[in-house]
Length: 271
Image (cartoon, rainbow, N blue to C red; front, side):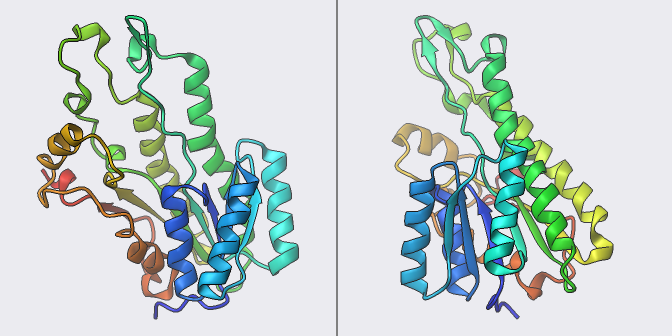
């Protein structure tokens, strides 16, 4: 039921922290992961490592998902190499920084730079749209259809709790915040999910979104302490805890799941 042998799974941001986890998850169940990343050398290195570790035919290449021409060409390359694409995982996104210059905090809405807004939207939303346009259309031509998985966030469902990012001693107008683009992108992916879920349903293309909570990655202790108090399970996610969900959504085990928004956040959004 969870078998992914002979499946071709394209993953954007595939050389990143979670992207690699997604790739390893599908490789472990027999799929050929296609590692797509802005940095070609990283993508190739991850693909080589996964091919060796899991004995699968992984492939890594550079891709600027904000360039329609590059996305179209990449899709053609994969089709030439593998003959099909079964699954698309829209994982790539910028993680906007909470930068301060002098007394001015550029993460705050009133100071947020339009160029940064455009860059974040281009990667997180436009990139997902373009990949869905070309890869998704390709998947829709498969006799058996396929799956599209959008990686949203718990912050696609709830607003960020800005108290998590506060720093003692700073005046209110200098306090760092979670930037606006993160919420906009992750919420937008939920809308894209529902649109695609109905658009290609007659072609048996399922589209679902995962809304993961924060993954522990050696964040500052005070931040972790404040965040985990907001989570019923009282901890952040472990790095590999989303693997099972990825495999499930790629496989026939999720054959009747379409348009679902899966919260996997330790219960944070239940409060």
